[in-house]
Length: 171
Image (cartoon, rainbow, N blue to C red; front, side, top):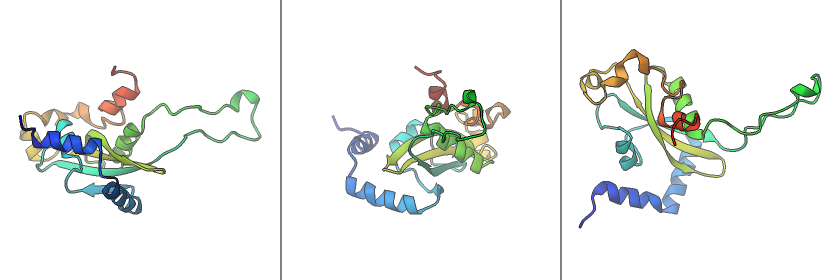
């Protein structure tokens, strides 16, 4: 039986062409931290997470620094009880990317996100954002739930998939 387009895209992303991905990441490193993208790079993943090619849906590519988040130890002026530093980062990088995108684009609401690459310095994510004021979104029966006032700032409150996973609400 012949497999569909989305299946083929999913299989291609399991073993991506290293040369083209490397060239892309070189361009992404030189661009800004937030880049508005016309179309999602991983169409299968974006569609699975709720993206539709209509007005109101925006894709933002976010670049996040990798590495430890341990703070430097204070060298003076504190009692020994206060000299401890945080050992591990409690939030995953995906959630951080969603929060930063929501902070940058205040009129948009984060729907979901997915990883598109990583190198020695950065993680790269595409964040699917929705403009809840667009009439196309308000009329869409499957997406108009995001226009309700209780769904503002979802990423900040940990209501996206990455936020729930990081908070231990998804098994």
